[in-house]
Amino acid sequence: MNTTPPTRTPALTPPRTLATAARVLRQLRHEPRTIALMVLVPVLMITLLRYVFDASPRTFDNIGASLLGIFPLITMFLVTSIATLRERTSGTLERLLAMPLGKGDLIAGYALAFGALAIVQSALATGLSLWFLGLDVLGSPWLLLLVALLDALLGTALGLFVSAFAASEYQAVQFMPAVIFPQLLLCGLFTPRESMQPALRAVSDALPMSYAVDAMDQILHHPDPTGTFVRDILIVAACALLVLALGAATLRRRTP
Figure 1 (cartoon, rainbow, N blue to C red):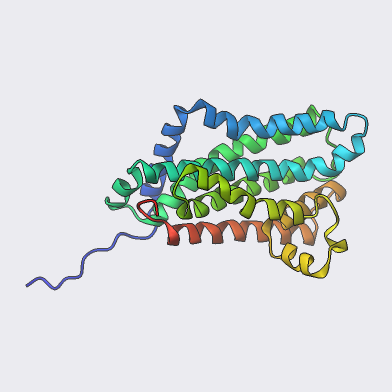
Figure 2 (cartoon, rainbow, N blue to C red):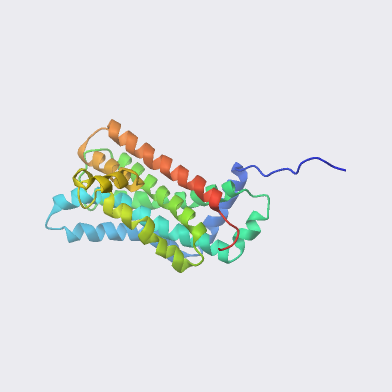
């Protein structure tokens, strides 16, 4: 009798991860509305914001950089959660996981595919804000792009994670008030975090969007990277990696 234990598929293998990313990008190529939502909506929103505050350019400077990171996070969260859920409800996910493809490969492949679009999205929004809309920041435009990209990747990770708990696209959208809105209200965009009630400040300190907004604020007011800026972007990156790991751990073949 053969007592050799079955060979387990490695948790993460680069060829399978890249193949998954390529498959997702091929699918997205045939969905122009999805691509438009990911790439153009942040650009349109930041443009609208600029002309809303046309009579007060300093207001646009003060909040424009923060929203430059928040808009990509929100759009990537929505698109990623719905796209992943669609794979599950259509049976595609079950067929993929029946192959020698680990959950880590699948999650990492999705992250790479949507991350590639996040680069395009962040570059367009950042370039438009700085060179056409007149956003005035003291720091490097490349640092602004870096934070916007990390925010978009965080939105991707959050979308992949919450999709495991939704049974329909409608439920996936319902997660937005629970996951995104509290971060939006407590991140310091509307009022300084230092002036919040202690309990709310403690909650704010535990939310990754707070550090994304803080990092943007550092770029706005400092010409060179500060220690606070480095700390903030490391926290955002660590949160994205942690949520991706949780997404791989909670990934299911079928809808609940």
